[in-house]
Length: 156
Image: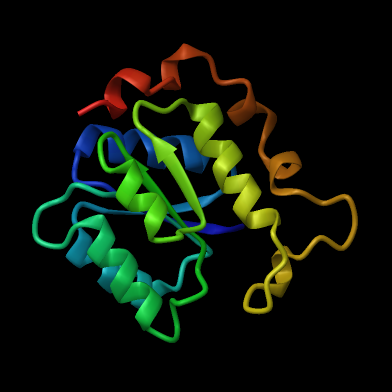
């Protein structure tokens, strides 16, 4: 089960995304700020990181730079979630980008795209057969209705 770290200072958004991921057969871990996110990433080495950009203490860009410079976390797929800093996020060459507001489908698609990529550091996610992260999502998670549409929650 892939472990995903969600770094988001908005409690409602973070808890909603964590619930969505847990329903989608992911092990989801949350951090309420960038400092804690860096600590959790280094301690737990998740398979993927979703990070907000605008956060107090350590912002998402700083989190990205710190984790890319750390040998144990340098290759972890990193997806920015941002409402206003998309141009700067694109310049940093992260693995993915989600523009807030975003939907459940967009979040799950971005995660599946990254976990389907073969990497040397994560051989268990290499495509050997017709195995994809998308097909591994539970039917329940794929069929979630508007209850989990977080477009209005994601805008800040």
